[in-house]
Image (cartoon, rainbow, N blue to C red; front, side):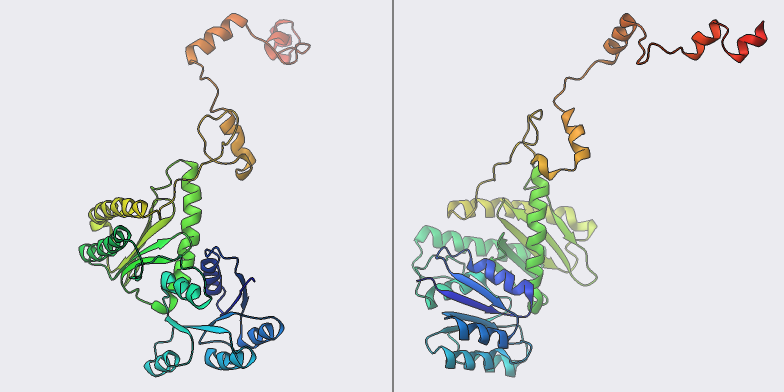
Length: 349
């Protein structure tokens, strides 16, 4: 029977990111969302909810109150609490509540999905950096190698945090902590939207691994670049995007990127480059779909496949053919002057 997961968060980008993560579990889960505890309880009263995923801070009743009311409706239902609060007293209160699992933001997506599979009794398919379970020795070694690469990269760049993120917004490995953990989910969601758009734009010129994004801030900088078609590195730290040292930092980043890509391929995580459709019948190189481009671009691309004409050959051909007119029944001004049909010719007489 299909199991139902209900996500309760008033931040749309957070619930969307969690939903996208859940949809990577190929178990046919039914996932729905609610922006408040009251609406979540209404949903839970109408249909069976197997797993409730709730943020602590909600409009109206908070996550703990929601959990108590949900358990009264469905004693067999499982609950995962998520919070971005930093108050030690409230954080301890949430951690000590009777939820089945508890995560502080930023949420480790590998641990989150692993908890979902465990609570719903699904086959465990999620492999993540923190998992020390039944991984084969080579896979475990490569996972540790990825973590070590990020740790060393953080030290080499003197960065505050280095994250390896996949194109679904899941943090697969990390070293250090982002400056504002409470907003990390929103930031990663925005970054991955940019990542997917940039991959699409870069693929048009057949350089999908060459784009890089710099964020030069007053107190904190960021560098974001792809690792193959399905992953990206985010580096955050003070001064790392400054022009005078950027070249040397990028050189280090590119070396680490290449090694990360090899390690990801070795454990079957990195995906192959997507096959790009042909733009137009007259274009030999695949670039983009015709319907994706403005009409004015199509005339330009129509000329790409045509053979170039030498300038001298063009004028020799023009001389041989002589002058032609699109309207042969009309006279030019010069012809009219010779026949005395212009005002100037009348005065000459």
